[in-house]
Image (cartoon, rainbow, N blue to C red; front, top):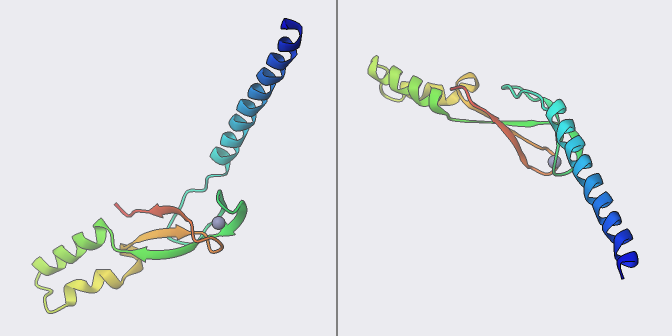
Length: 111
Ligand SMILES: [Zn+2]
């Protein structure tokens, strides 16, 4: 019985060792290919569709947008002029999505 069981244990241990080592290599690959996200499209590897894509950027209001809005309001920019930061891309957060599978790949926050 032990003669039959020993090769099976060895095969299972080799399989586990190879799985763990390939997982470490895969995580190292992701760590080395991570590109810092900015406010413009970047080329990045999508982990869902396994393709290298140029990200699609959508701008959404963030903390800096609301701070500028409040600052303009208290400086006398009323009657809708304090809403100008909501139209300026440089004051909004940039959300990077995959153009193929629409997976959110990251968000660049101003603050
Ligand atoms: Zn994708």
